[in-house]
Image (tube, rainbow, N blue to C red):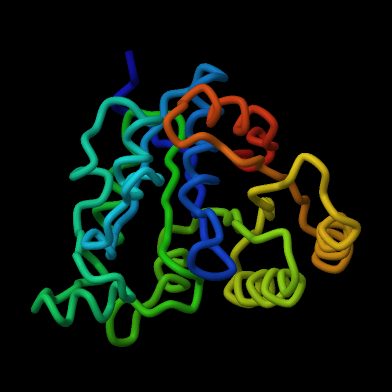
Length: 235
């Protein structure tokens, strides 16, 4: 049974861009933590793009997170959802929803109670706006959580990773890991060099997640167990 007085150690998962696998990294962190015996909770404060058909592909982000973080429905994990596949600030504006930064921060911090670990997933990258004068970088600062960056392994990722690390550090945030995925079984010389170069130039530990069958919680747990979870959630 969880201790209601406990406050979770949290991590903020961002990306170098949209579509780089933030939700798969978040789900791996959650599932790996559960496999290691920790209680977990997930939050995606804003989610847009629910009008997009998923077909046989991965489900919506909050559905995927709920599948590996038992105990809460998708509607609690992502309390503010929008249909159009556009930035959350635009989706909220088009829906006539006024986003209040203090409420967003408070709702996430309130999720720390009673579990060991809290994973908060952003949208796009750190510089994506949420509302006027407040963006995901501001949210990460307000939450005061270390950062994990999800990144592609391919061409262009060196620049994207280093810019994201620089933005985080300039704001006083600690970057605990950069996770490349989906990492191929037989990475190319460029992909191996991208990882080594990013780690060398940034000074941030890198890790990888493979291609993961989104229907398999066990696959997420296996991927998460290979991540440096103790370092990510270190005090």
